[in-house]
Image 1 (tube, one colour):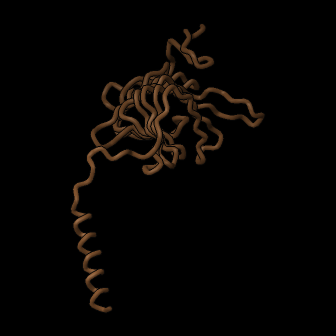
Image 2: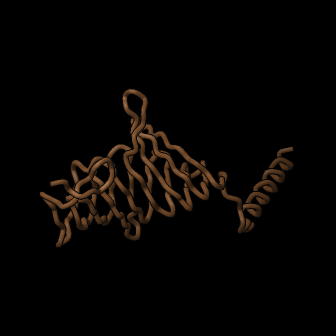
Image 3: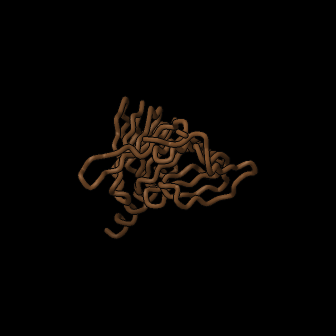
Length: 196
């Protein structure tokens, strides 16, 4: 009986070794689901006063990676909820591809953002291995950004800032300008001529 058990155990072990050495299939299916023509809302846990809304040609949801990938992004918007329940548009975001991870952090290679309060246009650029990141808790970071507004124009390297641009960090490139009395001003999210 003992001999039969040892032979059986060796057979199972040999089968396991042979089976583990077999090549795996090249076209193994990925996890998740892909949706086409999607309107997508994100309610960040770390920024409960905000709602992000996106329109995308395609959204891929991968539960194993705990991330959503939005391809062909038409427009992204960040809305802020007021105490009375109404929402106001805070900013718009344009990019081709956006990844949202399990912490609601947004990352992309290149993006353009328009912040209505101040009429700021920010063009974010990544570098290899360092994407543009929008962290719901701390704000923006990017290897490089160009900023255009009635009062600011120029580029900043190693850029970080909260959503309201109250504490911009980074290295200003030569030629960065600050206008103390610009010819145009921001009014209701639009750039208009300064009234005399």
